[in-house]
Image (cartoon, rainbow, N blue to C red):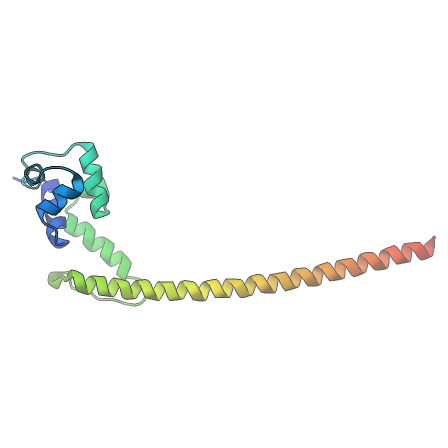
Length: 153
């Protein structure tokens, strides 16, 4: 029986349209060695495990402990639960559709960020104006107090 790790790396590889050869080159190992990982014949050392985790942009815990499809679904659900609403039926999961929807979501947040940043710039400008006003009043009061003190002398 294959380990969770073996199933996960195979699922990730297939879901992302990579061949075993692609992965073995990226990891700097032979294809047969990578194949042994996928088939549960052997397990990678920590260095290779880190490389696999980095390659697929997931945690080592996700690779070793969880069914990766469950982890991916959870991460996708988290991402798409934000505005704009995106519905993805994971039974009819299509990576190009998901990529398009996530890019749309990214553009939405980039626009939101621009709006927020411009609002922050306006607030900073308002604060600067208020600070200038307060400084002017303080300087006037100080000038009046100095001139008043000179008159008293």
